[in-house]
Image 1 (spheres, helix red, strand yellow):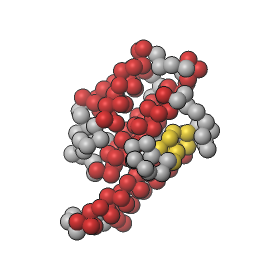
Image 2: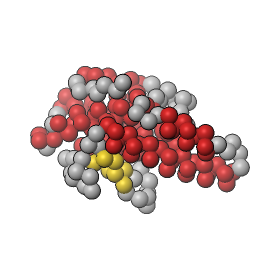
Image 3: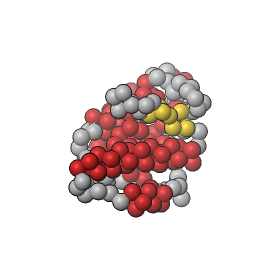
Image 4: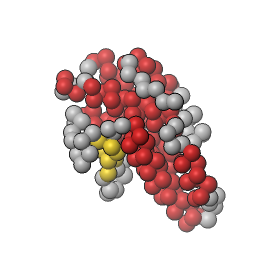
Length: 172
């Protein structure tokens, strides 16, 4: 059962652990929960229209994940890391722009790490809607990786097996 983190210390500790591990053992499900929790942690303080000094280390660690885009972890696939990277970039953007309303009233902007890519958004109004957006984005990145690998004809992923693995993360 998913239990949301709401305390600064818990969120900071989770981001620091991710950064200290240099994302080499990235748990995609844990990252998914952490990104959602962090979004809501900062959204609650959006009335300040600034990031509090004591929250800057969290912001720094999120930025570190985005900057580590070419350091793929050993424990997840490239497309999984790229999807997490995309959500981290969207999280930074949401914090910077004050959680502006988009198509969805409560949204996380996506498509920021892909030059010339389509801009999309994740509905952050509940964990369930966010989870659907995360899995949708994960599938898009997986399909892009399959297309790249098929052109090389080496180590082709079994798309059905991967889709089943993604579907198994539903609600995780």
